[in-house]
Image: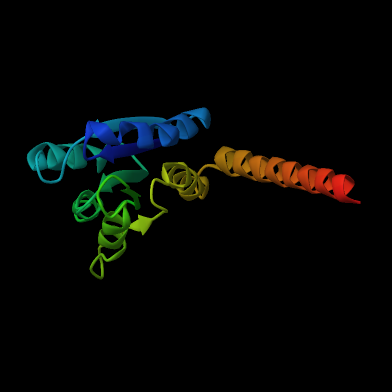
Amino acid sequence: MKTAIIMGSTSDLPKVEPAVEILKSYGVEVNVRCLSAHRAHAGLSDFMKEVNVNGTEVVITAAGMAAALPGVVASQTVLPVIGVPLSGSVLDGMDALMSIVQMPSGIPVATVAINGSKNAAYLALQIMAIKHEELRMALEKDREDMEAAAMKANEEVQAKFS
């Protein structure tokens, strides 16, 4: 099980690290790169050539402002690409969100919330769980645990106000 995470700038790292931690906690190999679509396009293309043949199953991309990175990556692979729009500009991530969701037909990028790298990781896990039974079972167990925690919180609220 293997994913790639590409960010456009090292300043994006704190917003991307939660995804790396989640994926690794499920036993997924994660290849992390900082390759700007604008400033490192040749390096990005070289990395995408590797990704297309090295067993990577999903690519997560994180970018702010113009957020060209997810679309450029999607144009170089048929693997699932997940875009994480990042805040940081005067538009607080709305510019990146609009850029990522407005891909042309035939070059889709799945998009999560602004700064939503955790959900990008979980979406990548769900995609890989189609093929990897152990991931599916682990995700199902975690969902059961989430439900139990939510029901416990509900009971505590009811007890407090009943």
